Image (cartoon, rainbow, N blue to C red; front, side, top):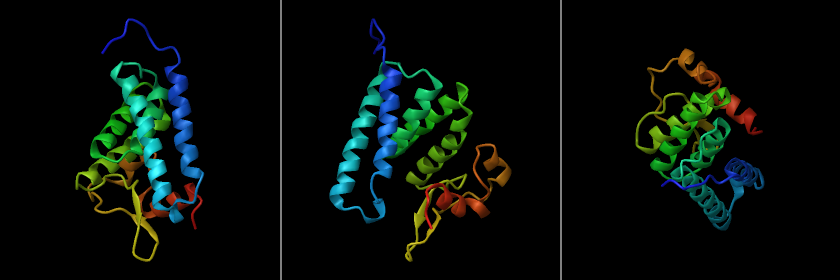
Length: 171
């Protein structure tokens, strides 16, 4: 759909949604979240995706930063389709010059692949084992080298879990 005008504050709206997405994730201890908490987050995530999808349908997500923000919003989706959209936005962000979105390209691809029952490539997705310890989500494609991971600012597999825990302040 093409409008005879551009919505002037698209970037500002997407940036606000991006900040809300991040704030929502740091506003609670999600390890102890209730079903009500998770329902609240899912509803807010869905609303953010709906707004971004509307702007995308209008072809008004054209800047690298907007693509990066849209990618993260869709990365927090619930479906393979959401994760694929996240990946496409991340790739577009890098294509438009946002080097910081390289890790997001890898993370969105990994999340998408795991969601369709395939092995993650880069080692960006984690889960807790039965003892509550963080580990890499499996399976992991053994053909991807640490050199390939480095191209996307992803640490070697041997350091992945510790870097993840460090990034998110986990013990």
